[in-house]
Image (cartoon, rainbow, N blue to C red; front, top):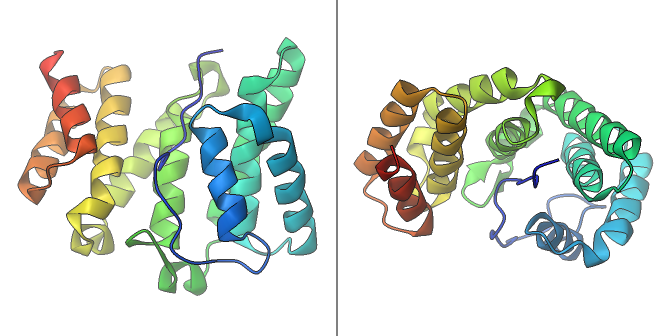
Length: 206
């Protein structure tokens, strides 16, 4: 299985957004999402416990699903890879269907939690192998996020990683016209950071 890449890999957490999912736990999750799986099992267990304690919290369920998908990438046996990945993707999707007003009112790294989760899910859904049949859903999520008024009102530094992942996904799925459209929007934002540079490199590769 190709390496699973989740969104916001280098983002830092500014405040605790859930009573159970602390900044410290999210920080360890994002370390794992960058490819350091040394604490993956421990993070998985803690997020599983947090979700069991607060099953109605979409933010907690979403990250439990996200780390479970990482477990699928890390697993050795094929059936374990499938089970963890399928369960993780399903939990992330369920969390998106649980979004409430609080998820729109609370912000994370410059975006409403709800948009951040949708963008992160889009990045994950478009990075797993196609036989999981979620890539089209991921591309549709990218479209919904990028077209959303609150996304367009957010600081460019908070949105550039979304454009980069969306452009990457569009290129990987032979949606060159869509990639070009998103790249033009990224350029119009005027941001100049590591994500805009990565997007430019992708577009130059043809």
